[in-house]
Length: 231
Image 1 (tube, rainbow, N blue to C red):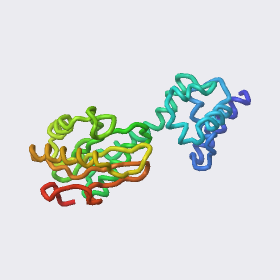
Image 2 (image 1 turned 90 degrees about the vertical axis):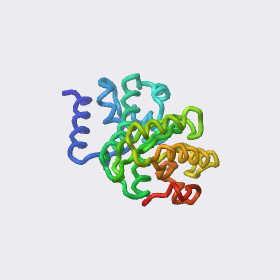
Image 3 (image 1 turned 60 degrees about the horizontal axis):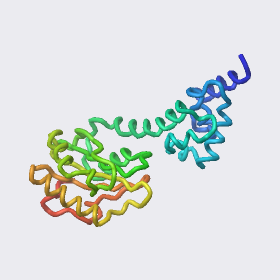
């Protein structure tokens, strides 16, 4: 066994014995890259990635095209690294399938996970049954919540198609604060009225920024009496 192969085996065994908790960021990247860069010193690549993107989070959130600008990072490695962050979001969302969300805080914490590592403004809709059990949580568009790419009609159709009793609208502010704009509030009003016409309740509108979120209902920014439910 060569020294190169021996080093990889030692690092793998260390991970299997103690997990990632005591790994340095460059060692985490080195280990990841074992599986898509078979014949290169991935320790050097780990350092190069951190130097370019500043942190492990910066590397994992970087677009594939930017990752490939680092010498030694090809198509496979770039795809693999971008997959890691999206896998985290997918896991955080789907591990809660069939979950019951009886409070606004439960809804907010559930939806917060849906925006992990999303770089673009995205609109999600959470559909609940009469017992506040999750029916589905789907992306309904990219862009601001009041943009033409996120039509009210599509959201109403999703709620009806899911046989939802109530829904929670959510969107993120990727590079800002979780503070609702006037446009956010106007869109909330329009959706609440459209859903009310088909006897579905808009429970809340959640705005997410990083690890923080704001509930329009809890903040008192908008929600008329006819839209209030026992949350």
